[in-house]
Image (cartoon, rainbow, N blue to C red; front, side, top):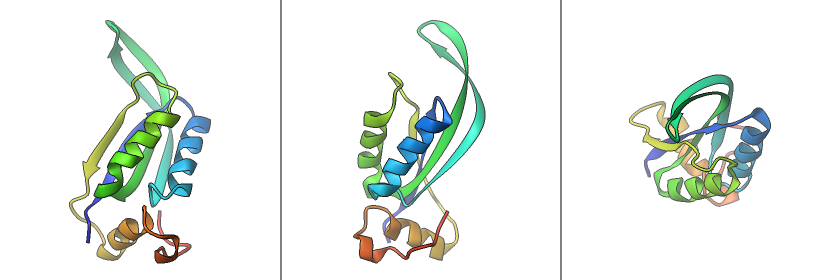
Length: 117
């Protein structure tokens, strides 16, 4: 089985997060996207400390599809330099991980419907 990964993305608002998340799942770039509203970010940008309310997306896909997922998020994202970080999944429920890998970038008939998240 190919390795599964998580891609962590921040977005400026829930509408943007939903639009990006829906595109990733509909285009079979991610098996599942979790959207977590209500995050506060503190960061340094262009020499200043900034504070912003943001929304987190956690996209789950196979390692081989992470590059395409990153490119699509970048194309859809309004930020000049969006946070897009991919992390390996080193363990989990084997059946879930198998679904996750089969559910992302696999042919539509290979994905069990109604499972996941």
